[in-house]
Amino acid sequence: MSETIAPPHSATSTGTLEVTDRSRLRRSHPRGHFDRVTIDAILDAQPLCHVGYSIDGAPYVTPTLQWREGDHVYWHGSSASRALKASKGAQVCLTVSILDGFVLARSGFHHSVNSRSVMLFGEAFRVEDPEEKLLKLTRFVDGLFPGRYGSLRPDHAQDLKATTVLGLKIEEGAAKVRTGGPSDEDEDYALPIWAGEIPVRTVVGEPIPDPRNLEGVEMPDHVRNFRMK
Amino acid sequence: MSETIAPPHSATSTGTLEVTDRSRLRRSHPRGHFDRVTIDAILDAQPLCHVGYSIDGAPYVTPTLQWREGDHVYWHGSSASRALKASKGAQVCLTVSILDGFVLARSGFHHSVNSRSVMLFGEAFRVEDPEEKLLKLTRFVDGLFPGRYGSLRPDHAQDLKATTVLGLKIEEGAAKVRTGGPSDEDEDYALPIWAGEIPVRTVVGEPIPDPRNLEGVEMPDHVRNFRMK
Image (cartoon, rainbow over all chains, first blue to last red; front, side):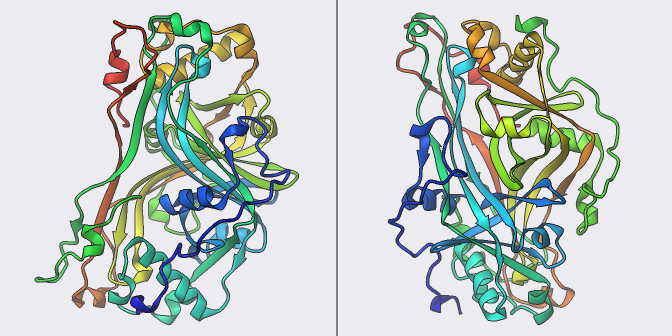
């Protein structure tokens, strides 16, 4: 099945998001980016996201995985999930962030982190059509592990029913990116203080086969070659 | 200065948070933890957090760094920050999450991730006293890089004024932890499908000294020995 499906992230993103009151960066303007190339690259590099929603006016932030298809991001969960029920048809903020390093300056004030993040705002919608929902879930799994979905036991109808997929159009939001070393006050460069950057990154460890795998079942390429972008 | 300061995270945490309507886990109950040992270990292992707050009823999720001191978590930012102004004295949700791996099952439905996360709820307060604020910031930096604050150019008064520190008492919230391999339907274990776990972790790269460091300034131990817990 998977070979008939267009790869996720396939759309070419050349646009720029309109700056709104919600997405405008108040500070550190030069770090703000509204172009889809920058935004999409961050979304595609980090499946972990944090979705903010409200219940009775109080904010909640739930970590979950997101995936992008063209002009939308999607996430999923149990149809019984309070988070998903509260998000559907409601305003949400979906934030993806990648910590790239710690920036050590010559004063406490100028310490910083190198990071890439995206905040998206809008009304979350539920993918209602069962076939479309299955297609979204297929693309989610195959986006991480190319070709895996077709190798799996097909979904039971009740499992699909028990799963909700939410989506959000990429139309309001901003990316924020900081790279490079510290930026100190001019006079502080004369001080004998070590300054610099400590990079951090996510690495993939050796896959751990389930002890109950049948004999002769080989590790597929989509496992062996899995990397965090 | 730093040697006179008690190490952050120093309090022994033996309590258990009361389960509230907000913090009760609706699903996956066995993955929920309310004991402070579990909660504190996650907070102390991952400085990156996502703070959820509301502006005009709409949710926002801002990535920032948090640090724990005893029964509180703190985060900071520009005093001009919209995020901090909207959070002060308001209900927030502070979420810390660590992705430990991808869990590949024999059906799409049972795919999962191994992760550790904490959601904390409550009213954020601002640290008003200037000396206490400086102490908090000192502990923040020294918590990551032991002894660094005392080696820095002392803060300018206006920099401290321009910095806001917010805090949240650890009293309402929950941790969620998943570990181990896939959990498939009994009959699916007979299928010749590779299942297992792909671990991921954050690693620290080689520190990059600022090219403008003075000659003879050596890399301090708090840089050389820095590790993500």
